[in-house]
Length: 188
Image (cartoon, rainbow, N blue to C red):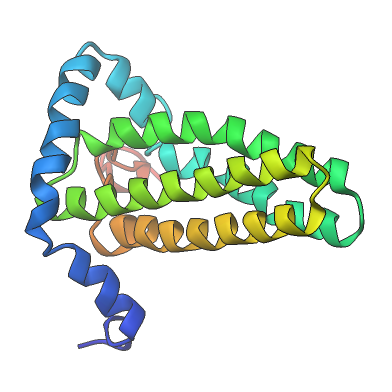
């Protein structure tokens, strides 16, 4: 066993792969999604035009702005923090859509992790929406707490997403094309 698989966090992430109770909900989502996206739009949402999955690119905006929001809270700029949370919520929608498109290509252990990943994202977004609601009432400390809680859950979700990509290889090599270096007919 390598060092990367010996940590309690790595073991917990890997354990999700074996939770067969997630299979029924995963298939309940995957089946209709496959039918909905089987018209070419799924390839676009998965990033075939980009040459690699689009979902990892799409998640950078919500994660980035949600990470910046508490900094603006600490700088006593609650309006800027509120706007960042709102931008993140808006940017989370395309990230979720691209993630759902990816979901249709996953094998069973990957889908199990993806269900927990998506569920974690739903919890995070609920906390961040709650942050927006209390921000509008001027409850700055409660808003900061909810933002930090949402960001923490986003971190857990990100760990699950990283496990999907880097350990389980979700989406890896799906869009791969032969490199120029591999073509014996081209002089380098």
